[in-house]
Image (cartoon, rainbow, N blue to C red; front, side, top):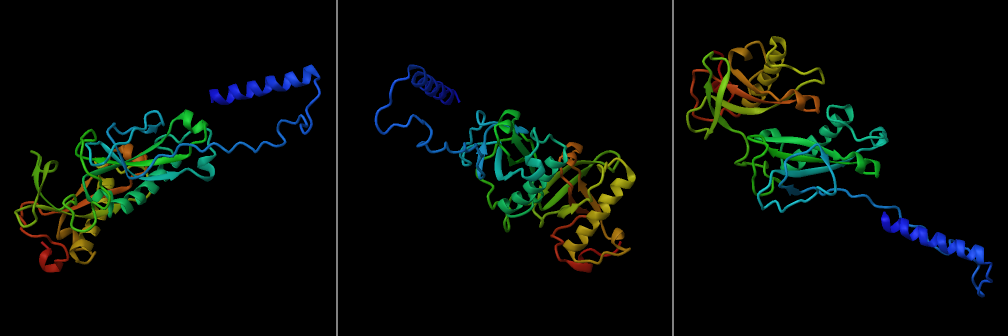
Length: 299
């Protein structure tokens, strides 16, 4: 910007010189300094790349000055799985969307879909987390309308990993959730631990899929009605996974574990719960996928 202002000042001084001196112009010069100039090209704003990684912690705001992607083969904290654009009314805002706003949630839904395409499956099929990064106030004022979608490890958002996640959840991936040995708290109600184990080893729980909640206020797991709504949805995922009917007997076939998102993530657009079938006090030594009635009888 400084270079452009300096050039304009110099041209302006030159024009004043011609106007004030009244000197005659050489043949072929009409004195119109703009008639033969092509228009300046419209500035092209910075747009971040997808399929790159970052060794900085996740941040809701991103600027060109802080944009220093690294090779995904190197240790990193997040990976950009999709880059989208705010359009229509969202793009006409005077400020970038704030976390928890409707435009932010809309961007999150686009990120959710983009992440699934990039990873090969819903990111919730692994211990991953998804966040949205939008331009800074200054970048937005300068015309930036992008948003980028960052995936990080859910074990610890500061944990580094190496290697790209592109296609990492396709097929039989080691990252995909499977079977778990569950440790209960003293009250036999709270989950103390869920340790992944091969499904051919003794276990009590198995990941069955994801249930999407309706767009309602936060479903707090500490509230009975909200908890039951989520567990009912997870039982339906169990039925589809094991291939048993969704009927009045379903609740007598299996218990469920639901992986609750934080309220902040809910406000930002996450509406999907990880669901696990759970047989308390009964050990399994095989996956129940497509096992039918014999694999998950009424108890």
